[in-house]
Length: 430
Image (cartoon, rainbow, N blue to C red; front, side, top):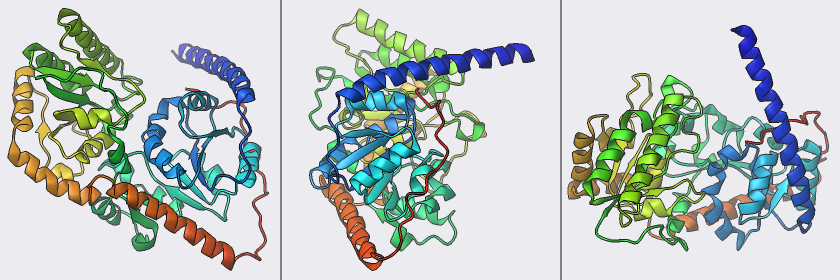
C-alpha cells in the first residue's frame, strides 16, 4: 500500500513538473508580446500568489478595481505561471508576472506602490509584506460568517477593508488588542454596484421563476463541511426541473469534488440533469454557469439557494429572497451570532419538501422585510453607488496617510533591498 501511494505521488509530482514547464513556456511567449509597464504609473497593487483554481477570489474584484483605476491606476501582481497566463487573457487590469522575489522587487521599485491589496491568506503574502513604506491591506474575497473570517491573520496587515457592522462585531469577539477604529475600515460590498454591468442574460426572461443554486465545495475538514451538492443538490434540482415553472441557474464552486469523489459525481449528475431538461424543452433555458463573472446571477434570480459561504452575503447585498442549506455534517461549525440566527434554512429532505420550502420563501413578504435589517447590518447603505463611494474614500484615506508618513520619515534609511533566497523553481500552475 505504501509503495502504491508513493508511486502515485511520484506520478503526480512528475505531471506537475511537466505542467509547470509547459505553462512557463507559454507564459514566456505571451509576456514577450506585452508592452512594458509605464514606470511610476501605479500606486495601487493587488497581490495574488495563488494558482488559477483560486482566481475566483480575484475576479470578484475586477469591476470595483476597474472603477477605482479611473482615478488611481491599479496593477495586479501574479506569482504563479498558470494564474498569470489566465490573467493576461482575461484581466481588465494590467498584470505583472513576478515569479521570483527578484521580479517582485523590480516591479516594486519601478512602480512605487503605496497600497497593496490582498484577497486571500496565501502564505506567500509574507514575501510581499516584508516591504515597508507601503500599506498592506486585506480586502478578502467575500463577506461571510465562516470561521475564516475571524482569523488572527488580520493583524498581519496594516489595514483591512471590511463590509460593515457585522464584520466588525465578528472580529471583535475573537481578536485581542486590535485597533478596530483605525485598522478596520467599513466599505460595504462595492461588487453589488456592478452586479448587472453590461451583462447579457444567457436566457430570455419569461414567466418562469429563476432559481439560483450556488453551492460551495465539500470542504477539507468536518468543521468546514458546508457543501450541499451531495446532500441537497441532486434531489433539489431534479424537483425544480420537474415543475416546468422554474428556471435553474446552477453555479457550483470551482473546487467542487476535488477531494470527495461522491461530491464530484453528484455535481456531474446535476449538470447532466440540466442538459437533459434543456434537450427535452428548448424554452426551459436552464443554465450551468461556470463562467468567470459573478454578479448577474445574484441580481437576476428571483430566489437564491446557497451554502454557508461568501455567496450568502453576496446575495444578501442584493436584498432578494434567500435560502441557506443546513449542513448535514454535525461537525460543521455554524456561527449563529449573525445573520445565520435568523436566516431561512433549507434542510436536506425529499425533493418535494425542498421545493415547497423554496416556493414558501420566494413569496413570503415577511421574509423579505426581515432581510432588510440584515442587509443594513452587514453592508450599511446599499443605495446604488454608496458602497463604491466608501471604497474610494477608504483608498483616498490610505494614500493620504501614506503621504503623511512618507513626509515624516523622509530622512529614514531604506532597507527594502534585502533579498530573499526563497525562489522555488516549481510553483502552483492549477
